Image (tube, rainbow, N blue to C red):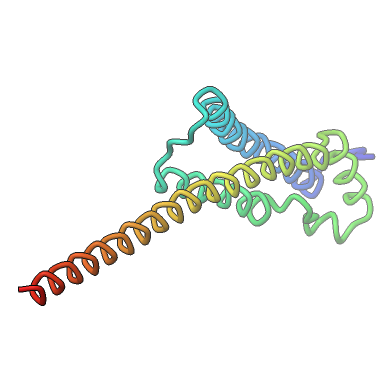
Amino acid sequence: MLQYLNIDGIRTIGSVLGQSIALDYYVRQVDGMVAEFTDINRGMEKTGTFEMERKKLFQLVGKANSNLADVILKLGLFERSDIAWKNAKYAQIWEYLRDEFELTQRFASLDFKLKFVEHNIRFLQEILQNRKSDFLEWLIIILIGAEILISVYDILTRSAITKL
């Protein structure tokens, strides 16, 4: 493959190594989020309830979305370096190193974890939304009940006045 080291060879190797290191960083970030959701799910399993502030959930959503965007945009995992595009020899080295460092498989694993996080976020958002809907439904029921009580009171006071 690479018979002697030159600037283009170093750039090609550095590009793949940089992607590998950055991928490790994002894997650790996402693993932290997976652990958070695992704790939340275990808590729900034990208590049967979900207690989380809306703000905290939105922070987790933001973190997940930021990590996914960073992986796609900053990591450039699926983009060849300019040198690899221009020279077949460096393209071969680039492909070999990507296979050697298992970048595609590691990204697939990261993507699976991000999908798990995304699924949990949707689920928890639905719970919060249902909770809010329940509150609003009860509020409407209470208001209708209050209106009925006021109407009954009004009818009773009018009938009492007409009897006098």
